[in-house]
Amino acid sequence: MEETVATMKLLKDIRILEFGAFITGPFASMLLAELGADVIKVEKPGSGDPFRAFRSGLYSPHFQAHNRNKRSVALDYTQPEGLATLQALVKTADVVVINSRPSVAKSIGIDYEAMRQINPRLIYCAITGFGPDGPYADRPAFDNVGQALSGWGSRHRHGDDPRVVGPAIADPVTSYYAALGILAALHERDLSGKGHLIEVNMLESMINLATEPIASYFDSGKPIPVLYRGAMSQAYNLTCKDGKRIGLHLSSPDKFWEGLCRAIGRTELIAKYPTRMDRAKHYEALAMELNEIFRQRNRDEWIALLEREDVPFAPEHEIQDLADDPQVRHLGVFYEIEHPKYGTVKGTQPPVHVDSTRLEDLRPPPDLGEHSDEILREAGISPEQIARLREKGLV
Image (cartoon, rainbow, N blue to C red; front, side):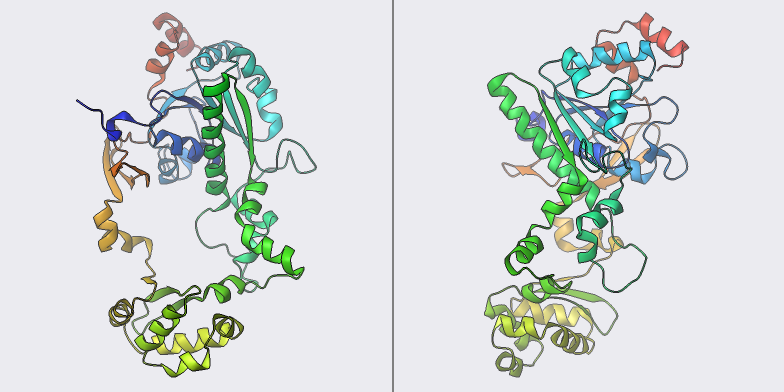
């Protein structure tokens, strides 16, 4: 019988050791786990990834979000016998993923040079906040630090409200670049047989994500206004009579602007703002005018009118609305999976489809050390050695 993509798993022969905490390392390795890689999460006995305890217990939703499809081994590799055991695991690995300050890995003997001596074919991905060296290298870095330093945060702030909105951005963006670098290195290794050091940092990742406003600044030499993208893209978030909101993105084709004017019964605006640059120049005034117009009808009424005129729009969902959206239901975005200890775990399906098939067969996020014995046995550690490690509190 021909093997399907769902059971084949594109990265089925790749084993990844993840020394991850919080988001960047765990999310990068999870992206590869969802493509079929065997990801082994190496954690400290007793506590594990700090995200485990972000809420009470050791299985917080924050941990679950970034750690599905993995196995967990609890191993104290800061002690000599534990480090020797880890080295046995490294011999079986294709990739190591670590997110920590540059000095941390070297201080405990899990840096690239140490691991390359054990496994010359290893792809070692080091994720940091600011790079391996430089004036900021040993500073701590979390998501909002990356957003602030890269200029990204300034692009998504209007006024001086000190509160931060929205989910993490800098962390997962860095994870995506890390996963991309790992995949490229694995491909090259197939050709050369050589391992590689992949270095990805949050600062460069976020600067790269802002490539469009940066290119605009380089072109004009002038600071780019916060509302510049919305104006040039003709994007609006409008509030309806019932308090619900709609997002529009008209882009550059005039037909979408003309369709909107017909939908709202204001065709005279076509002549008033005939070109995209006219609309961009008067973006703030036009946004206020459209907002007042949309307050005159409930959202469902506007949806019917906008759909009839083929206007690019979407209802602005809140998280609790997603499961009821017809397209989300059609795609089967959410899954339920059973964990033997924690029961039903819900989450989002991997978004990658190959040959019209979703990559399935998901594992729930692991309990701390849930797979320790099987992982160590796979690395050639005897039951007697495992028992001795456990007696010493190293497993």
